Image (cartoon, rainbow, N blue to C red; front, side, top):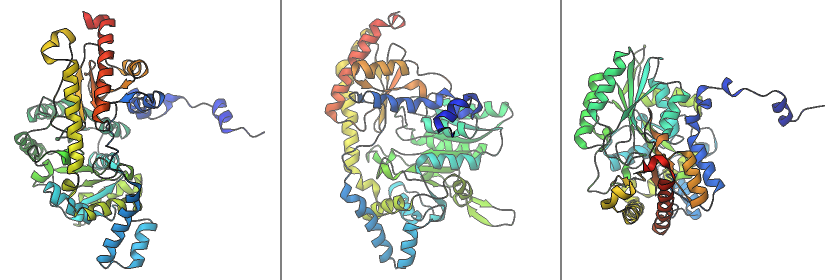
Length: 448
């Protein structure tokens, strides 16, 4: 008798510890647990994710964007057979909308690179995996990273067996002096700091912004110490004109910065499309010269072969339609996020007046943009507490401890406000305030 798959699994189980360490590591499971909590408690208002605003999505636009890109290719004189093949067949490994992305980068970020320096990827996550795989050649190569950090970079490094050294950020983000100290510490262990990861604009999870002078010092440090900077910039597009700072990549004159971008927050989340900018020249043994992005195509070919043609066409159509000026095209969206940030800050101040901190023990930072802020509380804010909050108070959030690379954040939580209306934010903070008050009085260590 043939066994069913379930029976086969039951009869011959695979021991969990036999899997890769990145799969076994409980720290790699935090985002799944957050998602499952949201599904288990659908009535809970969720501050636990950084999902983009839903209000700009229109089904009628789905085919329009693709049609717009096809029309653009025809206007350029691309043969019909070539257009058909691009959309229906396997495409170039590094993608086919690099020219559109290059024009966007020049307009939006003052980043001037050739299309050949751009790789189209499956979102930020693949861009990070490709960059890490290409830049880290030895077990002694170490990734320096801002801490707290987006869990995706730690996860990518873990899956590739790349050691990570966290560098705790200050109130204004990652500090060059702290990076220099980390470089010295890594070298003292006989290892090589190969790259530095950071989100300089409205960092996830803390919302910090690295000042201009610090950006220049980080570039100088990279040149002196010989490491690459991995600049992740999903939120910088939404900075107001007064708050806007030049990206590290726009200040980079040596090719020391690999720029990791995504269209998930700005254009089309479901397209799952991003890009990697690697313009540094790579010289082969035969003297051939290619951009870093072209050289890294070998890694992308092994990960995903190529990015979705339809996703590329949709993003290409969006960029063409916007005149390659995504910053101007998203001004209304930026205003939505600013309104939601203000609503969150106002609601927190209403329920936890700063002048009464000694009574409630709750305080928070005040980002100038982005999708997140951090709230410090007088009790341990772990996944167990978050589930209790979602189940009993119908409000969820993300424990900050999951974002710290070397411990910390046990009494803090991250609030993501990007996909909640101001009314939902006010109700959610009211629910959160009841949870915090009850948790603070029922937890012995919170009152000691």
